[in-house]
Figure 1 (cartoon, rainbow, N blue to C red):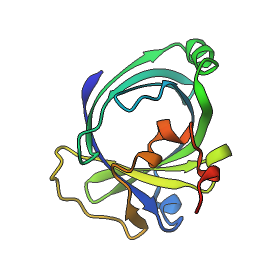
Figure 2: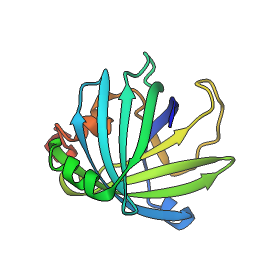
Figure 3: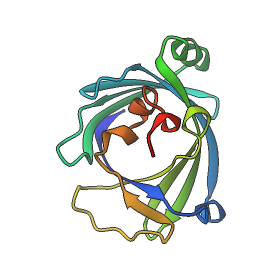
Figure 4: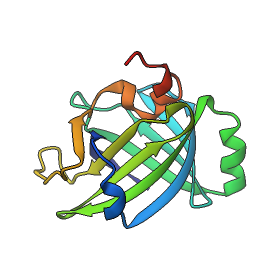
Amino acid sequence: MEHLEIERKFLVGSDVYREQAISKTRIVQGFLNTDPKRTVRVRIKNEKGFLTVKGESNSSGTTRFEWETRIEPIEATNLIDLCEGFILEKIRYEIPFEGHTFEVDEFLGENRGLVIAEVELEHEDEVFKKPDWLGDEVTGKVEYYNSQLTIKPYNQWNR
């Protein structure tokens, strides 16, 4: 599947989203390539494998090309063994809110303590309501990209 991904990212200010979630999924993923011009991700989600290629983000950090295809779980497991840096593990919650679905990722392992919410939009200027538990916006801040969290995980940041 190929399309332009338009999303905004935010830190999360409280865990109230857990009560509002309609799903909770464990995700394991790694990156075969972390170059911001073309990241190549391998993911296992709900025991299903995925291979994703993402292009470079635009200047605002909201939009980029994305192509994804399903692969066999064993292929995903074998490819994860070839990935660069740290392997990401996270729990993803899906929360419907005012016509949009927010995905909240609670990172585990080397990135424990980091919680990020994303919302996909139809266009960059789309107006949307923000739940009270959303914190500061981090859209376009490269250090929050999943690919970069495999290189310099959250627990290595000077905070």
